[in-house]
Length: 131
Image (cartoon, rainbow, N blue to C red):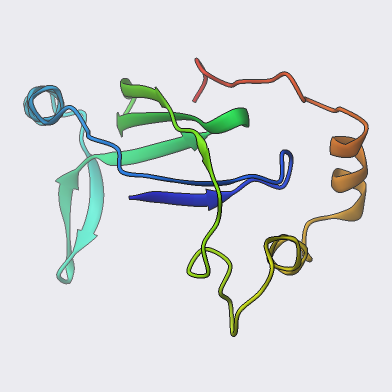
């Protein structure tokens, strides 16, 4: 389940994304076999592993990568649509309107960055091919 709110477009997003399990298994096996895994702390010690990176771009574009040492693979590129938020989507310490929730949750976002976005900075960027 992926759930987020976008400051730029003021939309809420929520969807379940099916990952390509067979592709991921093959990539993990290959990365481990090629000794391209990264150390991941697990139960008191380092073990070989792989990082999942999730990129969320403008307008609901979502990318998922597998990343090891000196290797990265894009395993999913998808798009999710905005939703009409429910009470669960806008609850933080108590019920809020969508507008109040956005204002509260992005209160710490730098004002100069907010101003840039309002002027259209990076408005067309999709980041669909970058890590």
